[in-house]
Length: 473
Image (cartoon, rainbow, N blue to C red):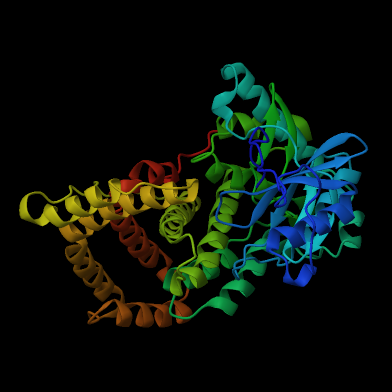
């Protein structure tokens, strides 16, 4: 993700404190940034005068290159370093950016790839993603409409340049509809370490509900809604690692879930109408609901591996929230397709008195810690939120877990002894169940997820966005 280019990178200087390029030793023995600077200079030409690690969960850097008297802002998009990508390889994304630029789409220009560390060396495009910084609602709406127009232009592109870049084109209606689901299922199977009954249910459900008659493949972004703008004008679209050939309505569906945490500037119904005007094609609300469920399924399944084997360097607090967000949105979208209403569980009231003391002391202890970097500050905020979440689990966690087992007994015919047995037996049931069991399984997963959303008191405002509102077209 490209962030606002108004941040100022830290200058790289040698021990003599001059503004000359630092003297470098054997690249293999040099620090990571030194190795990266050498590769940037080779690809861009000129001299790296500044290089700063971006404060975010995946590796990325801001750089400045001086070339022929000009300063060239550079962004380096690094590797995630986790097995969580359905289309692995940043070189694939670099090829997509190059093909889009050749097709007239506003994307960062790519100079090439660094290999150690792995990264895409590209122009740092000016702008911000924060739609709140627009001058007024009219400008926000204009920005959103510009993005839709850009999306429609991408969907009209000739597929041959992407085929030349190694992108697969599905050859059936099911292949077009489920291209991203299929890719993520391979990732899910590769990283799965334990039972995942909801994922197995949803994978079977989407395959039984593929929209019929939709056979026009298009190049799509999949993870939409990521753009920068300056003075009310979009400067680029970015973050294209999920892009592939599929159904263009998949992109509109993914916008619904982006809007919850990163507002687009206009509501989704307005943007769907804008898309219809730009393309001359009517959008089927039922198909939009299906693709919303399919997109969220890919997120749920891709989180399975990281959540089952959490490592200290992982963005653990975010993973916990993402898991609930995506599960909730997927289930609400499935409910839209089948025509049922969901009643959200009431938020948990945190405990008081004696049972609140430990979490209050924990929160106070964390608050007194002084962060020394933006990363430290983010970790402190996450720890405070987790302490509040833990307080709610103290209040109702055991009761909800018992109620979950009671509900499951109505499906399995007996009450499992604990959650491990419950997940194992429910997955086995799902794997052999026919569509006649969909209604009761869906009701079970909705009740389970809504209870867990209610427990996540510190993330409630964020999770509320994923109780999806119908799109009135």
